[in-house]
Amino acid sequence: MTQEFNCISPIDGSIYTKRQYTAPSAMADHLQKAVQVQKQWAKTPLKQRQSICSAAIDHLVANKETLATEICWQMGRPIAFAAGEINGLEERARKMIELSDEALARIKIPQKQGFERWIQRDPVGVVLIIAPWNYPYLTAINSLVPALLAGNSVLLKHSAQTPLVSERLAEAFTAAGLPDGLLQALHLTHDATEQLIQSSKVNYIAFTGSTKGGAIIEQAAVGRFVKLGLELGGKDPAYVRADADLEVAVETTMDGAFFNSGQSCCGIERIYVADPIYDDFLAKAIAWVNQLKLGRSDETKTTLGPMVNQKAADFVRGQIKQACKQGAMTHIDEINFPMDTGNSAYLMPQILTQVDHSMSLMMDESFGPVIGIQKVASDQEAVMLINDSPFGLTASIFTQDLSHGIELGQSIESGTFFINRCDYLDPELAWTGVKDSGSGCSLSVLGFDAVTQPKSFHIKQI
Image 1 (cartoon, one colour):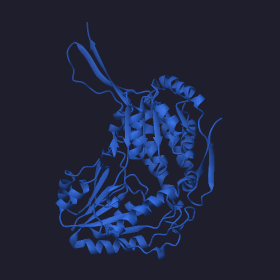
Image 2: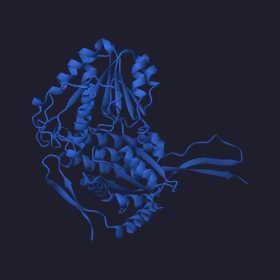
Image 3: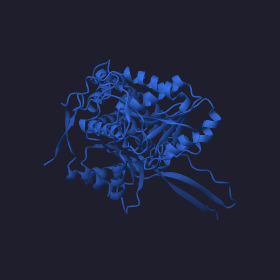
């Protein structure tokens, strides 16, 4: 008997949609179909692959408002912002299509008399993409479009919180003319996902999720020598130097910390502020947060929706409570956010000061609407604190001295380093992390390396 699961909306706790998990007995057929159709797709000219991918993006953009409503109800992003994810998807996908000519071209080798030599990029075969709920379209598209452009087939598994997303992506590519079986949306249990990872027919796994989840993926793949792309947790820092443009720093870091209820892979989770401007920064940050509107995601005035579920909200509540017991001070009054009753997915935003690295709040990923702000006396102290973390996804410095900011950036342990911005993925730059933030790379021309296998041709003329 096939197992059923529910998508519970964080807006009101109702069942938004029901789905059935893919039957275990059908997995062999899905895999075999993916293997067979991929062989022909690999022979399809790149221009044709590009055309189909472009048409699929057109289809998604044309249905933006419907997709936005579904995002809102599935994971709780305010409807005022939900369509922005499709805008981001379009930007990334179109850039990857543009870059594919360069990224998939043969690598030129200097001429050698009597020989022909080149390196070509062959598709790896079957790509398994395991995508999360927080940015379900964006995280999937990072690997999906490059994989198809490179000539692979794709098995797409989304979180049970956002099951409609994989279906909508499959529908879009089918409407664009993608051959049947090249993109299959599967609803899988954790056990079924692990079994799929262990299959010799799966040639690359792209996972976005928690560090704990990444460890499970690695364990499941042990002994297979299969390629893995793991985008994992983060505790992304920002450092505001004394010479920073204060208005820009406050607006950018607060948006980076609280957008999507803080449920962003590269959202700002800790801020270090230079002593001379600390008081001014804090006052402006408190004012910024107090203008947020916590409410139902389907109401247009809402700027801060619920977290994905009460369990996630309770984790952040626990971090705040523990930090306060250790001496931290809160600055946002609960009276301004009556929607937070203390026992639901609706969690008021919070700023804490008098924080330090003995607190979970400053060391462990929160993934919620809370930020710790710590005063620092020097650049050296700030860099030391930034690097004092098991994570290394992104880091930001706010300064008007760009050359000095770049110099500091060379000492910071992160996959992406920003100056005067944060919480953004540029599709022309490599998206990667260090330490417990994962391994592998997506986006940019380098992102195609994960979904291709180099093959050398060495031909002697006789």
